[in-house]
Image (cartoon, rainbow, N blue to C red; front, side):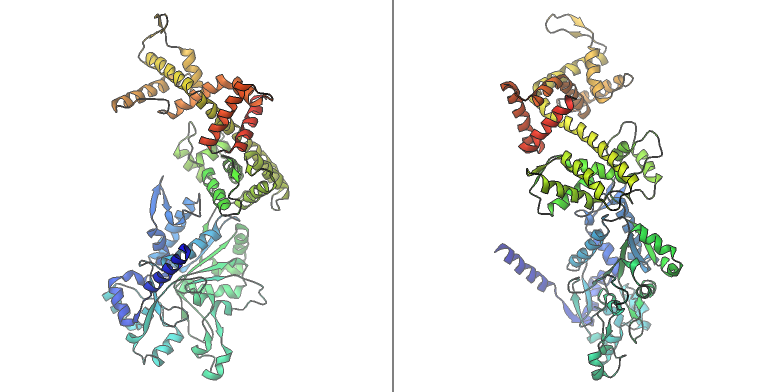
Length: 631
Protein backbone atom coordinates (compact mmCIF):
# COMPACT_ATOMS: atom_id res chain seq x y z
CA UNK A 1 0.00 0.00 0.00
CA UNK A 2 2.98 2.30 0.48
CA UNK A 3 3.40 2.91 -3.26
CA UNK A 4 -0.32 3.69 -3.60
CA UNK A 5 -0.03 6.26 -0.82
CA UNK A 6 2.89 7.84 -2.61
CA UNK A 7 0.89 8.03 -5.84
CA UNK A 8 -1.98 9.64 -3.96
CA UNK A 9 0.36 12.17 -2.35
CA UNK A 10 1.91 12.98 -5.75
CA UNK A 11 -1.59 13.60 -7.15
CA UNK A 12 -2.44 15.85 -4.20
CA UNK A 13 0.82 17.81 -4.60
CA UNK A 14 0.14 18.25 -8.31
CA UNK A 15 -3.37 19.51 -7.59
CA UNK A 16 -2.05 21.87 -4.89
CA UNK A 17 0.45 23.43 -7.31
CA UNK A 18 -2.17 24.27 -9.93
CA UNK A 19 -2.96 27.95 -10.36
CA UNK A 20 -5.37 29.82 -12.58
CA UNK A 21 -6.33 33.47 -12.73
CA UNK A 22 -6.76 36.49 -14.97
CA UNK A 23 -3.90 38.45 -16.48
CA UNK A 24 -4.48 41.01 -13.71
CA UNK A 25 -3.95 38.27 -11.10
CA UNK A 26 -0.80 37.20 -12.93
CA UNK A 27 0.61 40.76 -12.82
CA UNK A 28 -0.04 40.82 -9.05
CA UNK A 29 1.85 37.52 -8.81
CA UNK A 30 4.76 39.06 -10.74
CA UNK A 31 5.04 41.83 -8.16
CA UNK A 32 5.64 39.22 -5.46
CA UNK A 33 7.71 36.72 -7.48
CA UNK A 34 9.27 38.49 -10.51
CA UNK A 35 11.52 35.49 -11.26
CA UNK A 36 8.61 33.55 -12.79
CA UNK A 37 9.02 35.72 -15.89
CA UNK A 38 12.54 34.42 -16.53
CA UNK A 39 13.67 33.27 -19.96
CA UNK A 40 14.20 29.62 -20.92
CA UNK A 41 18.00 29.97 -20.68
CA UNK A 42 17.72 31.69 -17.30
CA UNK A 43 15.47 28.91 -16.03
CA UNK A 44 18.02 26.24 -17.00
CA UNK A 45 20.89 28.14 -15.37
CA UNK A 46 18.95 28.80 -12.16
CA UNK A 47 17.90 25.15 -12.01
CA UNK A 48 21.59 24.12 -12.06
CA UNK A 49 22.62 26.86 -9.61
CA UNK A 50 19.79 26.17 -7.14
CA UNK A 51 21.01 22.58 -6.75
CA UNK A 52 24.26 23.91 -5.27
CA UNK A 53 27.75 24.84 -6.42
CA UNK A 54 31.02 23.95 -4.66
CA UNK A 55 34.60 24.92 -5.35
CA UNK A 56 36.76 21.78 -5.63
CA UNK A 57 40.46 22.45 -6.21
CA UNK A 58 39.72 25.62 -8.17
CA UNK A 59 37.04 23.97 -10.36
CA UNK A 60 33.32 24.63 -9.86
CA UNK A 61 31.43 21.48 -8.97
CA UNK A 62 27.70 21.51 -9.83
CA UNK A 63 25.70 19.15 -7.64
CA UNK A 64 22.95 18.98 -10.28
CA UNK A 65 25.09 16.58 -12.34
CA UNK A 66 26.34 14.52 -9.36
CA UNK A 67 24.48 11.24 -9.76
CA UNK A 68 24.89 10.69 -13.49
CA UNK A 69 28.02 12.40 -14.86
CA UNK A 70 31.46 11.64 -13.46
CA UNK A 71 34.86 13.16 -14.13
CA UNK A 72 33.54 15.94 -16.38
CA UNK A 73 33.85 18.82 -13.91
CA UNK A 74 35.98 21.01 -16.19
CA UNK A 75 33.77 20.44 -19.25
CA UNK A 76 30.63 21.12 -17.19
CA UNK A 77 32.13 24.28 -15.68
CA UNK A 78 32.88 25.54 -19.17
CA UNK A 79 29.35 24.67 -20.34
CA UNK A 80 27.66 26.43 -17.43
CA UNK A 81 29.96 29.47 -17.16
CA UNK A 82 30.52 30.09 -20.88
CA UNK A 83 27.02 29.30 -22.14
CA UNK A 84 24.21 28.99 -19.59
CA UNK A 85 25.35 31.80 -17.28
CA UNK A 86 25.83 34.52 -19.92
CA UNK A 87 22.72 33.29 -21.78
CA UNK A 88 20.74 33.70 -18.54
CA UNK A 89 21.97 37.32 -18.43
CA UNK A 90 20.49 37.85 -21.93
CA UNK A 91 23.93 38.15 -23.50
CA UNK A 92 24.40 37.24 -27.15
CA UNK A 93 25.29 33.57 -26.57
CA UNK A 94 21.59 32.81 -25.94
CA UNK A 95 21.11 33.41 -29.67
CA UNK A 96 23.20 30.35 -30.45
CA UNK A 97 22.46 26.66 -30.81
CA UNK A 98 24.29 24.68 -28.15
CA UNK A 99 26.15 21.82 -29.84
CA UNK A 100 27.66 19.19 -27.55
CA UNK A 101 30.53 17.47 -29.35
CA UNK A 102 32.32 14.42 -28.09
CA UNK A 103 33.09 10.72 -28.57
CA UNK A 104 30.47 7.98 -28.37
CA UNK A 105 29.20 7.07 -24.90
CA UNK A 106 30.88 10.15 -23.46
CA UNK A 107 27.80 11.48 -21.63
CA UNK A 108 26.26 13.88 -24.19
CA UNK A 109 22.84 12.23 -24.30
CA UNK A 110 22.90 11.70 -20.53
CA UNK A 111 23.61 15.40 -20.03
CA UNK A 112 20.68 16.45 -22.26
CA UNK A 113 18.36 13.94 -20.58
CA UNK A 114 19.37 15.32 -17.17
CA UNK A 115 18.51 18.84 -18.30
CA UNK A 116 15.11 17.69 -19.58
CA UNK A 117 14.24 15.67 -16.47
CA UNK A 118 15.62 18.47 -14.31
CA UNK A 119 13.37 21.06 -15.97
CA UNK A 120 10.35 18.83 -15.43
CA UNK A 121 11.04 18.71 -11.68
CA UNK A 122 12.10 22.37 -11.51
CA UNK A 123 8.82 23.55 -13.04
CA UNK A 124 7.07 22.02 -10.01
CA UNK A 125 9.03 24.23 -7.58
CA UNK A 126 8.36 27.83 -6.60
CA UNK A 127 11.64 29.02 -8.17
CA UNK A 128 10.95 27.21 -11.44
CA UNK A 129 7.24 27.96 -11.80
CA UNK A 130 6.04 28.64 -15.37
CA UNK A 131 2.82 30.43 -16.34
CA UNK A 132 1.17 30.51 -19.77
CA UNK A 133 -1.92 31.74 -21.57
CA UNK A 134 -4.57 29.08 -20.94
CA UNK A 135 -5.57 27.03 -23.96
CA UNK A 136 -2.49 28.00 -25.98
CA UNK A 137 -0.87 24.99 -27.70
CA UNK A 138 2.50 26.79 -27.48
CA UNK A 139 2.15 27.64 -23.74
CA UNK A 140 2.75 31.28 -24.65
CA UNK A 141 4.22 33.79 -22.23
CA UNK A 142 1.32 35.94 -20.87
CA UNK A 143 3.53 39.05 -21.05
CA UNK A 144 3.26 38.94 -24.86
CA UNK A 145 -0.20 40.46 -24.25
CA UNK A 146 1.45 43.79 -23.29
CA UNK A 147 1.38 46.05 -26.40
CA UNK A 148 4.78 47.07 -27.83
CA UNK A 149 4.29 50.77 -27.05
CA UNK A 150 3.75 50.02 -23.32
CA UNK A 151 6.70 47.70 -22.79
CA UNK A 152 9.17 50.39 -21.74
CA UNK A 153 6.65 51.59 -19.13
CA UNK A 154 6.17 47.99 -18.00
CA UNK A 155 9.95 47.62 -17.54
CA UNK A 156 10.05 50.81 -15.48
CA UNK A 157 7.34 49.48 -13.18
CA UNK A 158 8.19 45.77 -12.97
CA UNK A 159 11.89 45.61 -13.93
CA UNK A 160 11.08 42.83 -16.42
CA UNK A 161 11.99 42.94 -20.12
CA UNK A 162 9.47 41.52 -22.58
CA UNK A 163 10.65 39.88 -25.78
CA UNK A 164 8.43 38.38 -28.46
CA UNK A 165 5.01 39.07 -29.94
CA UNK A 166 1.63 37.49 -29.43
CA UNK A 167 1.14 34.44 -31.66
CA UNK A 168 -1.48 34.57 -34.47
CA UNK A 169 -3.79 32.21 -32.58
CA UNK A 170 -3.73 34.19 -29.32
CA UNK A 171 -4.05 37.46 -31.22
CA UNK A 172 -7.31 36.16 -32.69
CA UNK A 173 -8.45 34.74 -29.34
CA UNK A 174 -7.79 38.08 -27.63
CA UNK A 175 -10.17 39.79 -30.01
CA UNK A 176 -12.84 37.10 -30.37
CA UNK A 177 -12.91 35.48 -26.90
CA UNK A 178 -11.98 38.46 -24.72
CA UNK A 179 -13.16 41.42 -26.82
CA UNK A 180 -9.68 42.91 -26.79
CA UNK A 181 -9.63 43.09 -22.96
CA UNK A 182 -6.20 41.63 -22.28
CA UNK A 183 -6.70 41.99 -18.52
CA UNK A 184 -9.41 39.29 -18.71
CA UNK A 185 -7.24 36.71 -20.47
CA UNK A 186 -6.98 33.55 -18.38
CA UNK A 187 -3.48 32.52 -17.30
CA UNK A 188 -2.56 29.12 -15.80
CA UNK A 189 0.48 27.49 -14.28
CA UNK A 190 1.96 24.79 -16.50
CA UNK A 191 4.36 21.94 -15.75
CA UNK A 192 7.01 20.84 -18.21
CA UNK A 193 6.66 17.29 -19.44
CA UNK A 194 8.33 15.63 -22.40
CA UNK A 195 5.67 12.91 -22.41
CA UNK A 196 2.85 15.46 -22.54
CA UNK A 197 4.83 17.65 -24.97
CA UNK A 198 4.78 20.67 -22.71
CA UNK A 199 7.88 22.86 -22.76
CA UNK A 200 10.22 20.03 -23.81
CA UNK A 201 10.61 18.73 -27.35
CA UNK A 202 12.80 16.22 -29.13
CA UNK A 203 13.44 16.18 -32.87
CA UNK A 204 15.14 13.26 -34.55
CA UNK A 205 15.85 13.26 -38.30
CA UNK A 206 14.67 10.40 -40.47
CA UNK A 207 14.57 9.81 -44.22
CA UNK A 208 14.76 13.32 -45.83
CA UNK A 209 12.33 12.21 -48.55
CA UNK A 210 9.60 11.26 -46.10
CA UNK A 211 10.16 13.68 -43.21
CA UNK A 212 7.98 16.78 -43.30
CA UNK A 213 8.92 20.26 -42.09
CA UNK A 214 5.59 20.12 -40.21
CA UNK A 215 7.38 17.93 -37.63
CA UNK A 216 9.16 21.11 -36.59
CA UNK A 217 6.67 23.92 -37.20
CA UNK A 218 3.20 22.38 -37.18
CA UNK A 219 0.80 21.96 -40.10
CA UNK A 220 -2.54 22.94 -41.61
CA UNK A 221 -5.56 21.00 -40.31
CA UNK A 222 -7.34 20.39 -43.62
CA UNK A 223 -10.41 19.04 -41.85
CA UNK A 224 -11.16 22.53 -40.47
CA UNK A 225 -10.57 24.61 -43.62
CA UNK A 226 -14.21 24.22 -44.70
CA UNK A 227 -15.27 25.50 -41.26
CA UNK A 228 -12.88 28.48 -41.09
CA UNK A 229 -12.65 29.19 -44.83
CA UNK A 230 -8.91 29.89 -45.14
CA UNK A 231 -5.53 28.27 -44.67
CA UNK A 232 -4.31 31.51 -43.09
CA UNK A 233 -6.86 31.29 -40.27
CA UNK A 234 -4.82 30.29 -37.18
CA UNK A 235 -7.67 28.10 -35.97
CA UNK A 236 -7.12 25.91 -39.04
CA UNK A 237 -3.50 25.31 -38.09
CA UNK A 238 -2.04 22.71 -35.76
CA UNK A 239 0.64 24.35 -33.62
CA UNK A 240 2.02 20.95 -32.71
CA UNK A 241 5.55 20.90 -34.18
CA UNK A 242 8.53 20.39 -31.89
CA UNK A 243 9.43 24.10 -32.01
CA UNK A 244 5.88 24.95 -30.95
CA UNK A 245 5.72 22.46 -28.11
CA UNK A 246 9.24 23.17 -26.80
CA UNK A 247 8.43 26.88 -26.35
CA UNK A 248 9.36 28.22 -22.87
CA UNK A 249 11.70 25.26 -22.25
CA UNK A 250 14.19 23.32 -24.36
CA UNK A 251 14.37 21.25 -27.51
CA UNK A 252 16.80 18.44 -28.13
CA UNK A 253 17.85 18.27 -31.78
CA UNK A 254 19.19 14.73 -32.15
CA UNK A 255 21.78 14.14 -34.88
CA UNK A 256 21.34 17.74 -36.02
CA UNK A 257 24.23 17.64 -38.47
CA UNK A 258 22.65 14.72 -40.32
CA UNK A 259 19.52 16.75 -40.89
CA UNK A 260 18.29 18.00 -44.25
CA UNK A 261 19.13 21.69 -44.84
CA UNK A 262 15.50 22.84 -44.97
CA UNK A 263 15.12 21.85 -41.30
CA UNK A 264 18.25 23.71 -40.23
CA UNK A 265 17.28 27.05 -41.79
CA UNK A 266 14.41 27.39 -39.31
CA UNK A 267 16.97 27.35 -36.53
CA UNK A 268 18.74 30.42 -37.98
CA UNK A 269 15.77 32.67 -37.37
CA UNK A 270 14.78 30.95 -34.10
CA UNK A 271 18.18 31.39 -32.48
CA UNK A 272 19.05 34.84 -33.83
CA UNK A 273 15.66 36.57 -33.75
CA UNK A 274 13.67 34.38 -31.37
CA UNK A 275 11.03 33.49 -33.95
CA UNK A 276 10.30 31.11 -36.81
CA UNK A 277 8.02 30.97 -39.87
CA UNK A 278 5.09 28.60 -40.03
CA UNK A 279 2.31 28.40 -42.61
CA UNK A 280 0.81 31.66 -43.91
CA UNK A 281 1.38 33.58 -40.70
CA UNK A 282 3.61 36.30 -39.43
CA UNK A 283 6.76 35.18 -37.62
CA UNK A 284 5.93 33.20 -34.48
CA UNK A 285 7.90 34.07 -31.32
CA UNK A 286 9.50 31.24 -29.37
CA UNK A 287 11.75 31.25 -26.31
CA UNK A 288 13.60 27.97 -26.07
CA UNK A 289 17.02 26.48 -25.57
CA UNK A 290 18.07 24.39 -28.58
CA UNK A 291 20.56 21.64 -27.73
CA UNK A 292 22.14 19.33 -30.28
CA UNK A 293 24.87 16.71 -30.02
CA UNK A 294 27.27 15.09 -32.44
CA UNK A 295 30.66 13.42 -32.70
CA UNK A 296 33.86 15.09 -33.86
CA UNK A 297 33.99 13.42 -37.30
CA UNK A 298 30.50 14.60 -38.24
CA UNK A 299 31.25 18.10 -36.97
CA UNK A 300 34.46 18.38 -39.02
CA UNK A 301 32.54 17.25 -42.10
CA UNK A 302 29.80 19.80 -41.38
CA UNK A 303 32.09 22.82 -41.04
CA UNK A 304 34.08 21.86 -44.14
CA UNK A 305 30.90 22.27 -46.22
CA UNK A 306 30.75 25.90 -47.41
CA UNK A 307 26.96 25.72 -47.71
CA UNK A 308 26.73 25.53 -43.91
CA UNK A 309 28.67 28.75 -43.22
CA UNK A 310 25.56 30.67 -42.13
CA UNK A 311 24.94 28.12 -39.40
CA UNK A 312 28.56 28.08 -38.18
CA UNK A 313 28.20 31.45 -36.47
CA UNK A 314 24.89 30.38 -34.90
CA UNK A 315 26.45 27.42 -33.09
CA UNK A 316 28.42 27.31 -29.87
CA UNK A 317 30.40 24.07 -29.72
CA UNK A 318 31.04 22.61 -26.28
CA UNK A 319 33.47 19.65 -26.22
CA UNK A 320 32.34 16.83 -23.92
CA UNK A 321 35.39 14.55 -23.69
CA UNK A 322 35.72 11.21 -21.95
CA UNK A 323 36.48 11.23 -18.24
CA UNK A 324 40.22 10.97 -17.52
CA UNK A 325 40.13 10.00 -13.81
CA UNK A 326 40.33 6.36 -12.74
CA UNK A 327 38.19 6.83 -9.60
CA UNK A 328 35.44 8.59 -11.60
CA UNK A 329 35.53 5.89 -14.29
CA UNK A 330 34.96 3.32 -11.53
CA UNK A 331 31.84 5.25 -10.52
CA UNK A 332 30.55 5.13 -14.10
CA UNK A 333 30.90 1.33 -14.22
CA UNK A 334 29.41 0.95 -10.75
CA UNK A 335 26.37 3.02 -11.76
CA UNK A 336 25.85 1.05 -14.99
CA UNK A 337 26.11 -2.28 -13.16
CA UNK A 338 23.72 -1.18 -10.40
CA UNK A 339 21.16 -0.29 -13.06
CA UNK A 340 21.43 -3.77 -14.62
CA UNK A 341 20.04 -7.18 -13.67
CA UNK A 342 23.48 -8.45 -12.62
CA UNK A 343 23.89 -6.09 -9.69
CA UNK A 344 23.76 -9.06 -7.28
CA UNK A 345 26.92 -10.65 -8.74
CA UNK A 346 29.95 -10.32 -6.47
CA UNK A 347 32.62 -8.16 -8.09
CA UNK A 348 35.89 -8.48 -6.22
CA UNK A 349 37.50 -5.27 -4.89
CA UNK A 350 39.70 -3.41 -7.41
CA UNK A 351 38.10 -5.18 -10.40
CA UNK A 352 36.41 -2.04 -11.69
CA UNK A 353 39.47 0.02 -10.77
CA UNK A 354 41.78 -2.13 -12.91
CA UNK A 355 39.30 -2.01 -15.83
CA UNK A 356 39.17 1.78 -15.39
CA UNK A 357 42.98 1.99 -15.47
CA UNK A 358 43.04 0.25 -18.86
CA UNK A 359 40.29 2.52 -20.19
CA UNK A 360 41.94 5.75 -19.01
CA UNK A 361 45.32 4.70 -20.47
CA UNK A 362 43.66 4.38 -23.91
CA UNK A 363 42.37 7.97 -23.64
CA UNK A 364 45.57 9.67 -22.51
CA UNK A 365 48.19 11.10 -24.83
CA UNK A 366 51.91 10.71 -24.16
CA UNK A 367 53.26 13.63 -22.14
CA UNK A 368 55.72 15.87 -23.95
CA UNK A 369 57.93 15.68 -20.86
CA UNK A 370 60.19 12.63 -20.93
CA UNK A 371 60.07 12.21 -17.13
CA UNK A 372 56.31 11.50 -17.07
CA UNK A 373 55.05 8.21 -18.46
CA UNK A 374 51.37 7.36 -18.96
CA UNK A 375 51.04 5.61 -15.58
CA UNK A 376 52.39 8.66 -13.72
CA UNK A 377 50.11 10.88 -15.79
CA UNK A 378 47.13 8.66 -14.99
CA UNK A 379 47.89 8.89 -11.26
CA UNK A 380 48.41 12.66 -11.35
CA UNK A 381 45.12 13.20 -13.20
CA UNK A 382 43.39 11.07 -10.57
CA UNK A 383 44.63 13.34 -7.78
CA UNK A 384 47.14 10.82 -6.46
CA UNK A 385 50.49 12.03 -5.11
CA UNK A 386 53.50 11.21 -7.27
CA UNK A 387 56.83 12.07 -5.69
CA UNK A 388 58.46 15.06 -7.36
CA UNK A 389 55.28 16.42 -8.97
CA UNK A 390 52.57 18.85 -7.86
CA UNK A 391 49.32 20.49 -9.02
CA UNK A 392 51.21 22.91 -11.27
CA UNK A 393 52.60 19.93 -13.19
CA UNK A 394 49.06 18.60 -13.61
CA UNK A 395 47.85 21.93 -15.03
CA UNK A 396 50.77 22.00 -17.47
CA UNK A 397 49.99 18.45 -18.60
CA UNK A 398 46.34 19.36 -19.26
CA UNK A 399 47.40 22.29 -21.43
CA UNK A 400 49.60 20.14 -23.68
CA UNK A 401 46.66 18.73 -25.66
CA UNK A 402 43.30 20.43 -26.23
CA UNK A 403 41.76 17.22 -27.60
CA UNK A 404 42.84 14.80 -24.87
CA UNK A 405 39.94 12.57 -23.93
CA UNK A 406 38.23 12.84 -27.33
CA UNK A 407 39.33 9.32 -28.29
CA UNK A 408 39.96 5.95 -26.67
CA UNK A 409 37.86 3.09 -25.32
CA UNK A 410 34.28 4.01 -24.36
CA UNK A 411 32.51 2.90 -21.14
CA UNK A 412 29.94 0.83 -23.05
CA UNK A 413 32.64 -1.46 -24.42
CA UNK A 414 34.00 -2.09 -20.90
CA UNK A 415 30.55 -2.77 -19.47
CA UNK A 416 29.82 -5.13 -22.38
CA UNK A 417 32.99 -7.08 -21.57
CA UNK A 418 32.22 -7.11 -17.82
CA UNK A 419 28.71 -8.37 -18.64
CA UNK A 420 30.21 -11.08 -20.86
CA UNK A 421 32.54 -12.10 -18.00
CA UNK A 422 29.65 -12.34 -15.54
CA UNK A 423 27.53 -14.47 -17.88
CA UNK A 424 30.36 -16.86 -18.80
CA UNK A 425 31.85 -17.43 -15.34
CA UNK A 426 30.45 -20.42 -13.50
CA UNK A 427 30.78 -18.90 -10.02
CA UNK A 428 28.73 -15.78 -9.10
CA UNK A 429 31.96 -13.83 -8.55
CA UNK A 430 34.38 -12.10 -10.92
CA UNK A 431 37.79 -10.55 -10.35
CA UNK A 432 40.18 -8.18 -12.11
CA UNK A 433 41.96 -10.93 -14.03
CA UNK A 434 38.65 -12.21 -15.44
CA UNK A 435 37.79 -8.73 -16.72
CA UNK A 436 41.26 -8.02 -18.15
CA UNK A 437 41.10 -11.33 -20.00
CA UNK A 438 37.67 -10.44 -21.40
CA UNK A 439 38.82 -6.93 -22.42
CA UNK A 440 41.74 -8.47 -24.29
CA UNK A 441 39.55 -11.00 -26.11
CA UNK A 442 37.05 -8.32 -27.10
CA UNK A 443 39.61 -6.09 -28.84
CA UNK A 444 39.59 -8.41 -31.87
CA UNK A 445 35.83 -7.98 -32.18
CA UNK A 446 35.77 -4.18 -31.70
CA UNK A 447 34.65 -2.68 -35.03
CA UNK A 448 36.40 0.69 -34.85
CA UNK A 449 39.88 -0.17 -33.51
CA UNK A 450 42.75 -0.02 -36.00
CA UNK A 451 45.58 -2.59 -35.92
CA UNK A 452 47.92 0.09 -34.58
CA UNK A 453 45.54 0.98 -31.74
CA UNK A 454 44.90 -2.70 -31.00
CA UNK A 455 48.61 -3.23 -30.43
CA UNK A 456 48.78 -0.20 -28.11
CA UNK A 457 45.70 -1.36 -26.21
CA UNK A 458 47.18 -4.84 -25.72
CA UNK A 459 50.16 -3.13 -24.10
CA UNK A 460 47.84 -1.10 -21.85
CA UNK A 461 46.19 -4.34 -20.68
CA UNK A 462 49.67 -5.54 -19.67
CA UNK A 463 50.29 -2.26 -17.82
CA UNK A 464 46.94 -2.58 -16.01
CA UNK A 465 47.86 -6.18 -15.12
CA UNK A 466 51.15 -5.00 -13.55
CA UNK A 467 49.25 -2.39 -11.55
CA UNK A 468 46.88 -5.10 -10.37
CA UNK A 469 49.81 -7.33 -9.36
CA UNK A 470 51.01 -4.58 -7.00
CA UNK A 471 47.49 -4.03 -5.66
CA UNK A 472 46.95 -7.77 -5.10
CA UNK A 473 50.24 -8.17 -3.22
CA UNK A 474 49.39 -5.18 -1.03
CA UNK A 475 45.94 -6.60 -0.24
CA UNK A 476 47.40 -9.91 0.91
CA UNK A 477 50.25 -8.07 2.61
CA UNK A 478 47.78 -6.07 4.70
CA UNK A 479 45.75 -9.17 5.56
CA UNK A 480 48.89 -11.06 6.68
CA UNK A 481 50.36 -8.06 8.49
CA UNK A 482 47.16 -7.55 10.47
CA UNK A 483 47.51 -11.15 11.56
CA UNK A 484 50.92 -10.09 12.91
CA UNK A 485 49.63 -6.82 14.37
CA UNK A 486 51.69 -7.11 17.53
CA UNK A 487 54.81 -7.61 15.42
CA UNK A 488 53.97 -4.48 13.43
CA UNK A 489 53.55 -2.38 16.59
CA UNK A 490 56.79 -3.73 18.07
CA UNK A 491 58.68 -2.93 14.86
CA UNK A 492 57.18 0.55 14.83
CA UNK A 493 58.17 1.26 18.45
CA UNK A 494 61.67 -0.02 17.77
CA UNK A 495 62.01 2.25 14.75
CA UNK A 496 60.73 5.30 16.66
CA UNK A 497 63.18 4.70 19.53
CA UNK A 498 66.05 4.64 17.05
CA UNK A 499 64.80 7.74 15.18
CA UNK A 500 64.49 9.70 18.43
CA UNK A 501 68.05 8.74 19.45
CA UNK A 502 69.36 9.58 15.96
CA UNK A 503 67.73 13.04 15.83
CA UNK A 504 68.74 13.94 19.40
CA UNK A 505 72.25 12.52 18.90
CA UNK A 506 71.73 10.16 21.86
CA UNK A 507 72.57 6.51 22.43
CA UNK A 508 70.17 3.67 23.14
CA UNK A 509 70.43 1.28 26.06
CA UNK A 510 70.20 -2.45 25.40
CA UNK A 511 67.22 -3.73 27.45
CA UNK A 512 69.00 -6.99 28.31
CA UNK A 513 72.66 -6.06 28.89
CA UNK A 514 72.12 -2.41 29.80
CA UNK A 515 75.04 -1.31 27.61
CA UNK A 516 74.81 1.81 25.46
CA UNK A 517 74.45 1.41 21.66
CA UNK A 518 74.39 3.66 18.64
CA UNK A 519 71.01 3.97 16.81
CA UNK A 520 70.48 0.97 14.51
CA UNK A 521 71.06 2.54 11.09
CA UNK A 522 70.56 -0.77 9.30
CA UNK A 523 67.11 -1.25 10.84
CA UNK A 524 65.99 2.33 10.06
CA UNK A 525 67.17 2.16 6.45
CA UNK A 526 65.57 -1.26 5.91
CA UNK A 527 62.21 0.33 6.78
CA UNK A 528 62.69 3.67 4.98
CA UNK A 529 63.82 2.04 1.75
CA UNK A 530 60.44 0.30 1.54
CA UNK A 531 58.83 3.63 0.58
CA UNK A 532 61.68 5.03 -1.50
CA UNK A 533 63.33 7.33 1.09
CA UNK A 534 66.80 8.00 -0.32
CA UNK A 535 70.03 8.28 1.71
CA UNK A 536 69.97 12.05 1.22
CA UNK A 537 66.34 12.34 2.33
CA UNK A 538 66.52 10.10 5.42
CA UNK A 539 67.45 12.91 7.87
CA UNK A 540 64.52 15.12 6.78
CA UNK A 541 62.11 12.19 6.97
CA UNK A 542 63.22 11.22 10.49
CA UNK A 543 63.00 14.83 11.70
CA UNK A 544 59.52 15.10 10.21
CA UNK A 545 58.49 11.97 12.16
CA UNK A 546 59.86 13.48 15.39
CA UNK A 547 58.00 16.76 14.78
CA UNK A 548 54.78 14.77 14.23
CA UNK A 549 55.34 12.90 17.53
CA UNK A 550 55.83 16.24 19.35
CA UNK A 551 52.68 17.68 17.77
CA UNK A 552 50.67 14.69 18.98
CA UNK A 553 52.19 14.98 22.48
CA UNK A 554 51.23 18.69 22.73
CA UNK A 555 47.63 17.78 21.99
CA UNK A 556 47.70 15.02 24.58
CA UNK A 557 47.49 12.31 21.92
CA UNK A 558 49.62 9.21 21.53
CA UNK A 559 51.51 8.71 18.28
CA UNK A 560 50.73 5.14 17.21
CA UNK A 561 50.76 2.73 14.29
CA UNK A 562 48.04 4.63 12.38
CA UNK A 563 49.33 8.17 12.96
CA UNK A 564 51.58 8.47 9.90
CA UNK A 565 50.33 6.93 6.66
CA UNK A 566 53.70 6.62 4.88
CA UNK A 567 55.46 5.20 7.92
CA UNK A 568 52.65 2.67 8.40
CA UNK A 569 53.05 1.64 4.74
CA UNK A 570 56.83 1.25 5.25
CA UNK A 571 56.31 -0.91 8.36
CA UNK A 572 53.79 -3.10 6.51
CA UNK A 573 56.12 -3.54 3.54
CA UNK A 574 59.08 -4.34 5.76
CA UNK A 575 57.08 -6.86 7.75
CA UNK A 576 55.69 -8.38 4.58
CA UNK A 577 59.19 -8.64 3.09
CA UNK A 578 60.26 -10.52 6.21
CA UNK A 579 57.12 -12.68 6.02
CA UNK A 580 57.33 -13.32 2.28
CA UNK A 581 58.57 -16.86 2.69
CA UNK A 582 55.72 -17.61 5.11
CA UNK A 583 53.20 -16.20 2.60
CA UNK A 584 54.73 -18.17 -0.27
CA UNK A 585 54.58 -21.42 1.67
CA UNK A 586 51.11 -20.74 3.07
CA UNK A 587 49.47 -19.72 -0.22
CA UNK A 588 51.14 -22.23 -2.55
CA UNK A 589 51.24 -25.40 -0.48
CA UNK A 590 49.07 -28.12 -2.02
CA UNK A 591 48.90 -29.99 1.26
CA UNK A 592 49.09 -27.29 3.95
CA UNK A 593 49.69 -28.44 7.52
CA UNK A 594 47.37 -27.42 10.33
CA UNK A 595 49.30 -24.24 11.17
CA UNK A 596 49.40 -23.12 7.55
CA UNK A 597 45.71 -23.90 7.07
CA UNK A 598 44.84 -21.88 10.16
CA UNK A 599 46.85 -18.94 8.83
CA UNK A 600 45.16 -19.13 5.40
CA UNK A 601 41.73 -19.21 7.03
CA UNK A 602 42.61 -16.19 9.17
CA UNK A 603 43.73 -14.23 6.10
CA UNK A 604 40.63 -15.27 4.09
CA UNK A 605 38.39 -14.22 7.00
CA UNK A 606 40.11 -10.83 7.19
CA UNK A 607 39.81 -10.31 3.42
CA UNK A 608 36.09 -11.11 3.64
CA UNK A 609 35.31 -9.15 6.82
CA UNK A 610 37.42 -6.04 6.25
CA UNK A 611 38.32 -5.81 2.55
CA UNK A 612 35.05 -6.58 0.73
CA UNK A 613 35.89 -10.01 -0.76
CA UNK A 614 33.74 -13.11 -0.60
CA UNK A 615 35.29 -16.51 0.14
CA UNK A 616 35.66 -17.36 -3.57
CA UNK A 617 37.40 -14.13 -4.59
CA UNK A 618 39.56 -14.15 -1.41
CA UNK A 619 40.87 -17.63 -2.15
CA UNK A 620 41.44 -16.69 -5.81
CA UNK A 621 43.43 -13.66 -4.67
CA UNK A 622 45.59 -15.74 -2.30
CA UNK A 623 46.35 -18.33 -4.99
CA UNK A 624 47.26 -15.59 -7.48
CA UNK A 625 49.57 -13.76 -5.06
CA UNK A 626 51.18 -17.07 -4.12
CA UNK A 627 51.94 -17.68 -7.81
CA UNK A 628 53.41 -14.17 -8.12
CA UNK A 629 55.70 -14.67 -5.14
CA UNK A 630 56.87 -18.05 -6.42
CA UNK A 631 57.95 -16.69 -9.79
